[in-house]
Amino acid sequence: MTDPLDDLQELTDRLRDAAARLRDDSLSAEDAAALIETCARLAAEAGTELDRRSRAAAGEPPAGQGELL
Image (tube, rainbow, N blue to C red; front, side):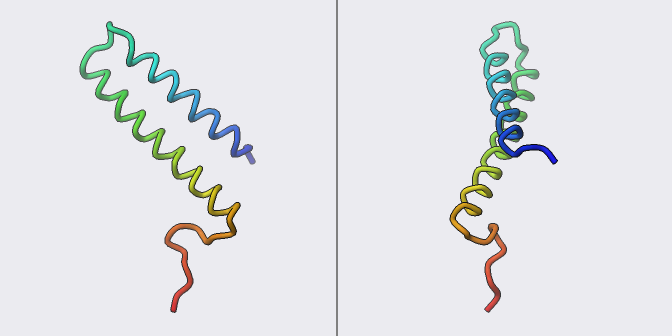
């Protein structure tokens, strides 16, 4: 099993790499658009993991997993 901190670090590294590539003037508009979509996906993954961790630390059930009445 991988360390969740490693997963977040990998996502962070990939986002930083993508940001550096977006600053490159030689990137075509199509490549930039695809890279922006990748950044959005990576940021969503990181946000989901951070939300999961904060809920676990607070002892809350996972999102969408509340008690049924």
